[in-house]
Image 1: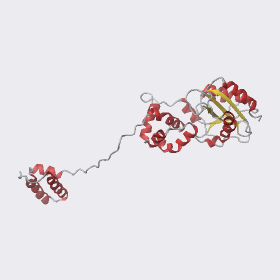
Image 2: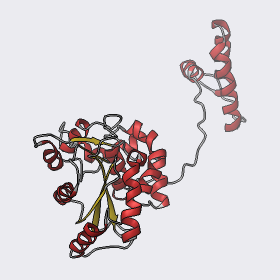
Image 3: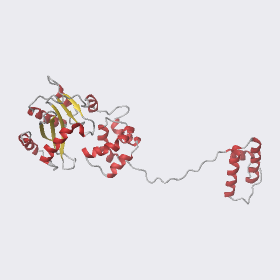
Image 4: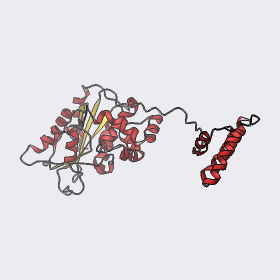
Length: 311
C-alpha cells in the first residue's frame, strides 16, 4: 500500500480521483498500470482497491428539480363529468379519452352543466393512466368481470342516423329532453320531452316528472297518439331515457316496427330541428325557472296540448 499524502484535502482527493478515473477509462493496459500506481501513492489505496476505485464508472449528478406538491385527482369531484363523457364516447380507453377531452369538455358544459375551473383544469391535465385509474371502479366489478351495462350493448345496435331517413315523408321524429331545473340538476324536477317531425315540422311536447325510462316511455306514447300521421322513425341523442329496452320494445313490438337511430355524442347539429324547437316551444314558453313540484306536470301538458301546432 502506498503512503497517503496527509496534506491533501478531501476536495482535492475527489478531484484527483476523478481525473485518474477519467484517464483510466480510455487508457491502454500499460498506462493503466501507471495510473494505478499513482492512485496508490497519492491516495493510499491497496492495489485491488485502486483497481476498483478507478474502474468504477462515474455516476452523473442528477439535478434536483422541485416538483411541488403532487396533483390530487379526487374521484368524487372528477368522476361525475368524466363518466358522462366516457359513456358518450362509447367507453373509450384512457389514451383516446385524453385526446377527446379538450374538445368534449366545452360540449359537456354547453349541454350538461358548467364545471368549476379547477375541475376543468384537472380533467384537461390528467394523463391517460390517471383517467383509466379514475374509471377503473366503473370498468370492473370483481376480478375479470366486465361492468359494461346492457345499455352499452344496446347503443351499439342502434345506428347513427346518417342517410337512412326518408326525409320527405312525414313520420320521422327527432326527440330530445329539456330540463326545467333553474340551473341546478340536483334533486328531482320537471323535464320536457320535445319531438319534431323532420318533414312537416309538426311538434309534440310533453312534461314529465324526472327523466326515468318509464316516464319517458309514457310521454313518447302519448305524443304518438297525437300525431296526425304514422310514426315511422325516431332519432334521439345518446341519453339513457331514450336508449333503453323499454323504448326499443315499444318501437319494435308492433306490426310495422319503428326505425330507431341516434345522433353522434355531443353533436347537437345532428338534431338541429328539435334543438330549434327546444327554444321556440319550451324555453320561450317555460323559461329557465325551476319546476320542482310534480303536480304542475298535468297542468303543463294540458297547456301544451291546447297551444302546440295551433299558434
